[in-house]
Image 1 (tube, rainbow, N blue to C red):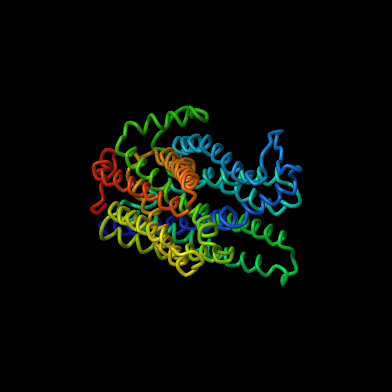
Image 2 (tube, one colour; image 1 turned 60 degrees about the vertical axis):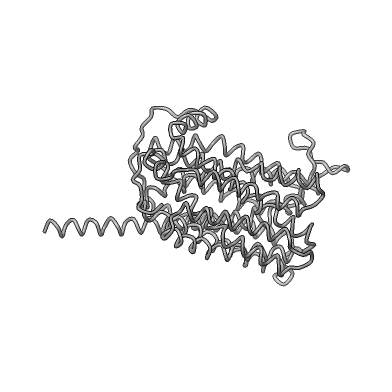
Length: 449
């Protein structure tokens, strides 16, 4: 009878864990539409056009009296949102660890971001300031929510399951992004058939991403559960002081910092390829907008298979080796991109396919590997540093890309210059003794890592 009771309890625990994991996947399904449809495709060009309508004769807008080129307003708004997120994430992360109440904080951040995105429907005429404010709020809220979402991974998946669980989460996100982007593109490209203007179609696409985000966030909020706080502190320091406290605490775990440095370097390369590939396609290869949008969609679709496939590879070879293999693949892909002939969309689609196959897996396995290196009870706080590495520190790659183009006048030289990020990231990651790092963090070491 005692053995049967233990088996029943273990079965109930497994069922509860699986239920939480399925709910966790759905937050990626909910929020990835914002990254794909809003940030990657529609908002940048549309907000720039709105700012240009409000610009003076010299092409400047004047937010708070500061002269800003209309064409730069979107980029500056994104940068400001990153600064806001960097200040808020450590504060929220420490509060989540201190109180153990991640779920209400996740819900608050998600619904603030979803509401701001839905309100982009009202971004018409010359309301560029409204657009900038909504972008700052939505982007910062997305970063905070993703930090809290990622910090659940060590709590809902035992060490041997994390690679697979993290990979499925990324796959859910890319699948949702692909699905909604297809619907958005049908509306955008055939807006006359639906009896709406191009501007209205874009605003519907923006608002629909917010409604999708808010609607599907209900699923993780119903299924995830809070745990008692492992670390109880009386106060949480504000802003930059909390960030400094987090960094000081991480210095007690130098091997965790070593991994974070490697991730910062190679992720900078990944983010730069994502952001500059369309520039390379249009300026160097002379490809049209429809080809570039098709390539974005192809990346989203294949990233689903890539995330799941690399998750399976990690079961056999371990997460670290699989990530190292993906960095080799990134290097070869950029090398092939250097030799792409101009005006050849087939080659560009092949390049997009290669990027899609390694993109999701690189990100998913990096997240799961980092989750092993986080001291128990510090999940949200440490993932705030991880999220800043992901979103707030990816500035060097675009700088190197821009400087290389300025010196050589060649986008081919600029794109191949990014190889350095993957080579250096490979070398830094290869030097991290992950088994010892996991043990030093106070976590059990998986059989294969």
